[in-house]
Length: 455
Image (cartoon, rainbow, N blue to C red; front, side):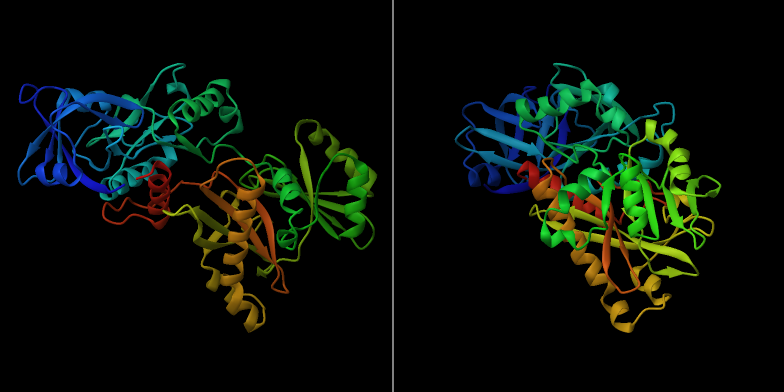
C-alpha cells in the first residue's frame, strides 16, 4: 500500500460542506480515489464519512476547521496518508500518544516537569517526519470512552479531546500508577477494541529478568550469580562463595536502597548502603548479626542478592555502562547510544542521581589500567551484549518493549556482565531545546511508532 506525506490545511466553515475534504487531482487519480460516493476518513480511532473534492496543482489535504477540531488537529501538521480501496478508507497519521505520570497545567512552559523538553522534541520530530502526538496522564483516562483529554502543542500547550491513538508509549514512572485498575483496563481495551499498539507496557523486576535470561545458554555468560534473598541460607551461601555481594531492591531504581556486603580479613562483615549524602557504613561481627540488622528492611522490600564483581574503575570509582537499545523503523533492535558512568566520590553506584558522571566509552576505558586489546574492543563487546540481552527480553518475557535501558559492567579481565534492565529509560534532559536538531533516540522512537502503525 503506497504512502504519501501531506501537509494538512484547514478551511473556514462554509467554504465547502463540513465533511468534505480537498485532495490534489494527481493523488486522487494515482490512488483511484472515488469522488462520486462517500469514503471513510480514519485518524487513530476517529472515523468519519467524507466526500472528496479534487483540486488541480495541489499536493496537500484540506479539511474544514470543525472537522479538524473534532479530530484534535491544530496548527498545520504534516501527516502520512494511505488509501485502502477495498474498504474505501483514507487513513491519515500515525497518531501517537504518550502516557506520562503527571502534568502541571499551572506551569504552561513546563507542563510535564523534567520530561517537558523531551515532549517538545517529540512534537518537533513528528512535524518533520509526518506524525501527530499527544500526551496524557492516568487521570485523563475515561472508562468506556473512545477519546482522551490529552495535551497537544500549537504555539503553546493546550488540552483537547483526542481519539485513541494508533500507538501508545507507556512512560509511567511508578509501578503504583501502572497497576491502577483504570490504567490496566485502558491498555487492554485499546488493544482489543481499537487494535492500538502499546509498548513498554510494564516495568521489569530485577529477579524476573535474571531468572528468565539465565536459562538461555547464550545469555547466561553475562549473568552474575543472582537469587531472591528469601532467608539466611542464601545469604550465607553467597557470602561464602564471594568476598563481596550486593543486595538490590527487586523493584528499585536510581541506585536507591542498594547494600554492599564485604567480608573483612578478620572475619567480620561490613555493609555500605546508598543514601542521599553518600554511602552509610556499618560493621557486624558475623553474618547472623548482619542478617538480623537487615531483616527489618526485608519485611517491606524484596531484595535480589547478587555476586559482587571486580569492575574497572578510575581512581577507585567504579565504572559501568548504560546502553539505550531501541527498535527501529523495521521493528528490529538497534543500539542508539552507550555511555560510561563513573561513580561519585563518596558513592559505590554510578547513577547520576547519586553523583555519578557521564563520559564516552572510549574516554572511560582509556583511564583504566587495561590491556590495549580490551580497550579497543570495549565498545563493540558492549554493543553486542546489549543487543543479545534486548533480543532475549523480547523472546522470553511476554510483554511488548520498544526501548530498553541496559546497564552493563566490565571486569578487569574485559568480561561483560549484565547489571540491570530498565523498561522505562529516562527522558529527563536539561539541555536547551534545539528546534532544528532532533536526537537519534527521539527519531528512532518515532520510526518505531510509524512501523507499528503501518505508516
